[in-house]
Image (cartoon, rainbow, N blue to C red):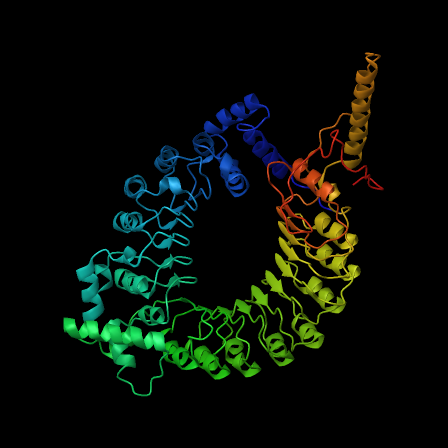
Length: 634
């Protein structure tokens, strides 16, 4: 039996829908009345939650007035992602009235992409430590440099997807930064910025920008995301504390060093430049002491990252706790053993696509006892690794991905999942040799899972899936796609028991129909009766118009008129539903569900992978949808 949704949750939904009527077709008077009540400041205990939900699901509906009413004085993190209707005046008002704000998310808000905005913001709220401008297409060097100059307390900066940035974006003082790079590291107090983490992924920046960033921030820098950029392997050396002279001393002076051609050309060009400038060379020993605060390393180069380079860099990363080496196929098991030996504090390890590693490469990582997140997708590990993991308590493990580990068997999986864990939150067993017993062990031992990927797992049945979702009610994201043994019964149990469920990927389930999704419409039987009455009324009108006889009206007999709404006890938080290649699901039912759920709060993809458009009537003569009525009241 599904649990009853708390009254507070239902009240929050009603408040959200009422506020949305400010720009919709609903009761604008009631919406204005609620807005005035929220502006009194007497409802700050709930207004932050309302603002967060509005921004997450309806960012286009957030205006200056709504923001002013919901932003309480206790607000610490202001998220305005995609809120294009908020102007600088609205942002300025919040910064003035919310003294505790330290984190600011302006992702995809191009209206704030002027240097003056952040100059003024730094005076209004001088304690901002985190700023996100992700996917702001008009952010350029001048905007970022204004941020770096005036926001002195900034520690976390997200510039992912800002396509107008160039390599000079972090070059604030060319002479000073060149001096630091050439003659050694100055004291930490002399650096211009105290940035701890910077994300410049999905931009056109190269290793030159990384070099400028390293000389700008110095030893405070711990996390850098340079995925999907123009940076090459030189960036790793810069982040490890090597300046250009030290890189030349390390590589070109060593006759045994094997370099890929682009890297060798880059280094020779640097050597010529430095010879002309007659700059001194940093000593290798000094470089090894640089940037020991580095904590996060992400590398995804299929061919460029060699085992020898990883073994050379590993001693420079004693405090690194996050390593991602996705698709670094050239790495050997021995290089990973070296990494684990030198970096003993690794908590997050991603080796997805490092195909040819063997079981012994994982032994030191497991023995270190620090792992909290482990991704071994597509690796050729065997049951030996799973057995060793099972012998070590999984008390710290929060995320585990074993997808496509084809050399494992159900025996190893059963040993691994036979241990109880209250910390594991995300688990992926995609395309593994799991069975009903495996799912039973997961259901018994991992009661607090929030994300489960069990796509393409052959041999599982409805009984196992139903037992799973009835035991783990904390699930928020699931992927049950391409499991031929999963039917309507499993999906109904999922939506009924997992009230926190937000995303469901059910692609390729050939036996499911519309039946488990229609209860998303509250009181479906009453809604179908109302549809029948409305069809009758439309027929009466057409007959009367054809005979030119007004006749008698049956309006007084319509006592069952009912306005459908989304269920408050069934799939209440579901926002994403993928039904690609689900042959028997009726698209008309999906369109009806979308319109009842209102205002794009539920995104559904149909058989062809197309976004389902919300519609209430279809076809000529405005015919209503199917007369499907469930066999029992939900």
